[in-house]
Amino acid sequence: MANPDECDTMIVGLGAMGSAALHHLASRGVKVLGVDRFVTPHIHGSTHGRTRIIREAYYEHPCYVPIVQRAYELWAALEKEIGERLFVQTGGLMIGPPEGELFAGALRSATEHGLAHTILEPAEVQARFPGFRVPRGSLALHEPRAGLLLPERCVEAHLALARRAGATIRTGITVTGWTADDGVRIATDAGELRARTLILAAGPWLPALVPDLDLPLNVERQLFHWFEPASHPEWYDAAHSPISLIEYADARFFATFPDVGHGVKAGIHHEGAVIDIDAPRAPASAAEGVEMQALLARYLPQAAGRIVDRATCVYTNTPDHDFLLDRHPAHPNVIIASPCSGHGFKFASAIGEILADLATTGETSFDLGPFAISRFQAPAT
Ligand SMILES: Cc1cc2nc3c(=O)[nH]c(=O)nc-3n(C[C@H](O)[C@H](O)[C@H](O)COP(=O)(O)OP(=O)(O)OC[C@H]3O[C@@H](n4cnc5c(N)ncnc54)[C@H](O)[C@@H]3O)c2cc1C
Image 1 (cartoon, rainbow, N blue to C red):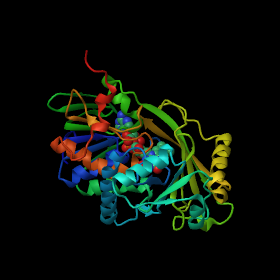
Image 2 (cartoon, rainbow, N blue to C red):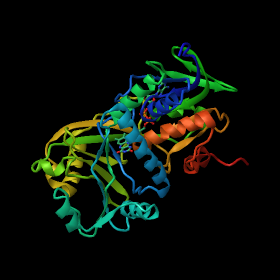
Image 3 (cartoon, rainbow, N blue to C red):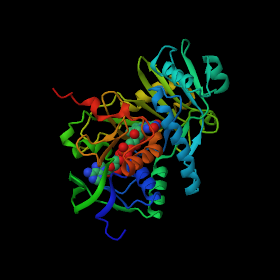
Image 4 (cartoon, helix red, strand yellow):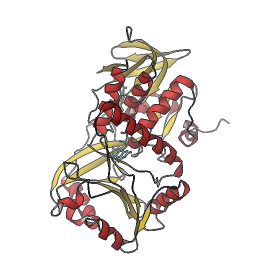
């Protein structure tokens, strides 16, 4: 692009969502500019930590299933185009009490959408996956299509293909504000930029870019720990072990990720402190490591050996934990993308396509009703 300050669409944030949107727009021949304050992928936002779970029997709500099914197709297409493995199919276990949010929700999505699945009693889980222990009274829903995505490589792939298709990428630029009428003027620390359409995919920094909407988002500190199995490492590698989500107490979850070269990863879903994204983040403490190890030992006993690595990351949460994916209520040429609440990565390939559709046609074939900004705005009196 000759004049990067004159483009059809500008994307703020080149993490999971912005890099995917950049790829889809550039592939359609749109003059697109992506900017990020950091060189992505990086460790300051929500898209690092080597692996992300993708699963189809979506316990959160069946409305996510069509989007994740499109995401599977697009991840496969991305792998093919970049010529690199981005997805590791392991199958997945959703473990919890039969009436619990996780098991019952996954079963509902599997049933409503006719998804392949098997329900396993604790002894059947152990017979099939010897590294797992499921307590009596709990069940596991096994879904064969679940697995792992490699998030940093996915972002790199989207950016590389976007660049190849003609996108302009500028890093080390912080967007500080914008105004919109027929077009959008974007204020940055490197001067003003202009576009016809603006996509805000700024992850945990999004609220500062739409102060007028007073979005009820909070940023939550999250942890990953990686463990060296104490014995039977072959039980926990990605060739033999599924990913798992475990409801270990009422509506309290943790996730496990089989070893793809750095140990078995585990992380508690939510339960973290609400933090200021611009303040220094406390590293994982020894006590937090002990807590994670004890929880892992209850369900994957031999996996819970020595801690070999740990990292912090952040969720950007909505109050209902559903995504925010909508056009700005007052400025239809400004699109807001906050698909996080701790479960957005798997959808990024499809959300990139949805954002490209919204930016070019104003429409998408997916039902974005559950992700509307209006659900958080008081009705006019
Ligand atoms: C611990 C953890 C575990 C998770 N596990 C899973 C999982 O297993 N499966 C799953 O599907 N999802 C998971 N998620 C959620 C998923 O990772 C996120 O939904 C997703 O990464 C969010 O991507 P994003 O593009 O919105 O944000 P980010 O990737 O953080 O990107 C935002 C980008 O915007 C840039 N930016 C921000 N403000 C500005 C500005 N003013 N100017 C310029 N650039 C700016 C930032 O530098 C950043 O690069 C997990 C998240 C965490 C933290």
